[in-house]
Image (cartoon, rainbow over all chains, first blue to last red; front, side, top):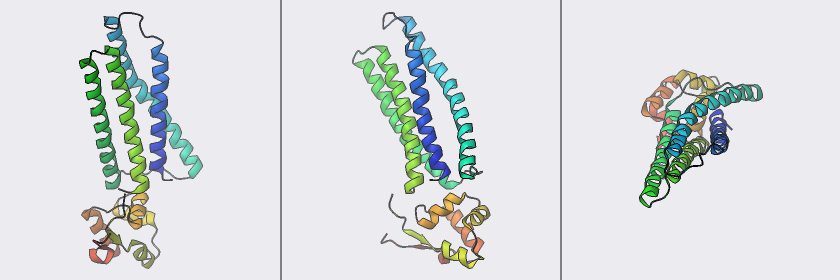
Length: 148
Length: 72
């Protein structure tokens, strides 16, 4: 298995773990108020705003650990350049990922149209965010393994 | 993904050039070793620019390195 394939798997697992752990922690702080109250909107605003830096920092730490463990285990250093194949694979993976998020976004807006609670819209947005990341990582793994 | 219709003689040419390693060829043309592996296996069709670079390393015309087979 190449370095890029291992990196895609690590990224996939870390995305799932970070979002799951963060959601489990934050859900305990969900305000006991009316679904349409300002507290609920403030909660979801904070949820998204804090998730971004938490996710970035956690991924940086996980990648550093991965690079160290990978170098020790395989004696293979990470590729120092990103070549045309890497860029093409990233582009294809990002395209698929955006399609998934776009579908999730439309679904989230649809939930408002059919009079669902605002929390449902936010949960769909989070779900589509993690789904799009997963599709990106799985696509990268697939293209590196099966060819592009 | 199916095999690319572009086939190549890179492995043979490497052997004929002092058994050049995939890593050495990758460094000469400015890509990763994995990309050379993918090209040799037919899993990736390189850009025209990269194809010319590879041919130049071996000092041969492009047609001597790559060939196109529509049946694939």
